[in-house]
Length: 308
Image 1 (tube, one colour):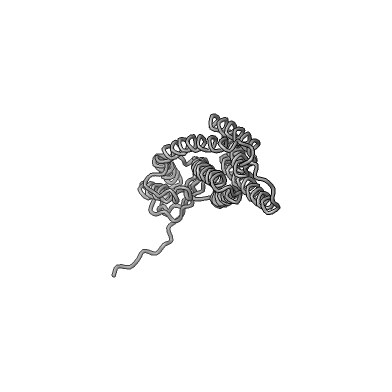
Image 2: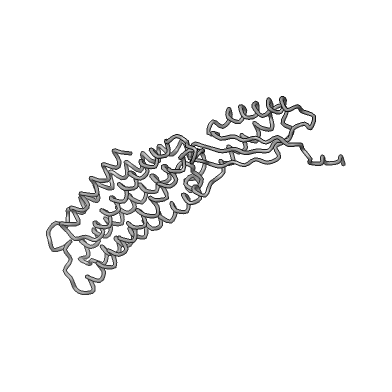
């Protein structure tokens, strides 16, 4: 991620250079977009390091949710500000067109610079996007990409996927705006490309904000993980029934489990302790991400169904 952050920083500088030479608003929007991407990766790195801190008395379950906080900041601050700036730049450029200002992209003789920069950036982002897809496939499994983004407990993969997809699509919008402006000599196309970049960034910001907010509020383990935990409990000798079971992600790879299990009313305290220890071992065997586990024994008061 450090290499990607450095690469995005360099790309941002080249886009700023192309904007300085041509005045193309879509190039400025893309430069700010690359700055946002660089900041995104810095925040995700910071969150990952903070999450590794050991648990304390004040935070007994550790700092795993720091990764969720950094992802939330990515969506709210950087993507939103980048999107709003692009929309502002589009509006400002459109006002200049209405006032009859000359188009710097067509007058300076540097019209080819943003085209070269954008084409090279599209190639680079395509390779980066392909890498992000390949890295996400093992975690995605057979579910759709939309479901994967909605249900992923590790925020980095959805953020990187959406970031790369937005970067690639934003470059296409910018190239369309610049290219059509050069062809038609009408700066409205540059404005349109800039506005599309802004709307794209805001859409990604909203999507990420919704997903990371859900993670911050506290999501249960996946249905598959809950099923494995329930089966392990039910299969443990001495457990008559799982009365209720609740799970909570303390971090992307940290799960809290709390369950009430039914035991025989005649069981001794020592035997119940053995049952609980066996159940805990069974749960951790099928779900290694369980880092906090609390089992409460109880007498099963459920009335068995009468035979028909």
